[in-house]
Length: 198
Image (spheres, rainbow, N blue to C red):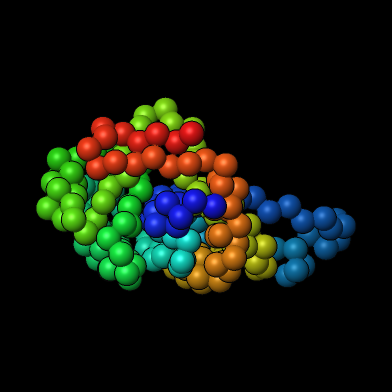
């Protein structure tokens, strides 16, 4: 694949929830321990996470608590993205995110401008077909979490399992997903208002 793709840090947010579990059982085993799944007392199991990946590493994964703001996102850039960028030995690393309102906030854009030499930002045009490679990994992560039995019975357990399973994804899996994009060539210039993927 083109080396251009190897120097992109892909990021995204996942809002994951538990799904209903169906158990085949006979009527007289309805309340057997093996046929029951614990529930969470607070009324549901859902966790919002942010994560990043690159060709060379599974990046950080963090739990997002409550309503996230542009200020929270600047904190992610400072504490998660910049340290990951600094692991690369060149100045060609490009950071990708989508165009959610938080990402396009003035304070976030100002943060990119302050560190534009170290943190190149890949513009992500509206209505672009979903080419964010990390999207493919969400299904891998969710499948791993849902294959656990018994499933996590608290938000804390769900969070811990998500983090553990994320770091268990083989780097080869990430690279294989990226290989699916080898038919695309990435054109990127700092002065372009957007990027072109053909």
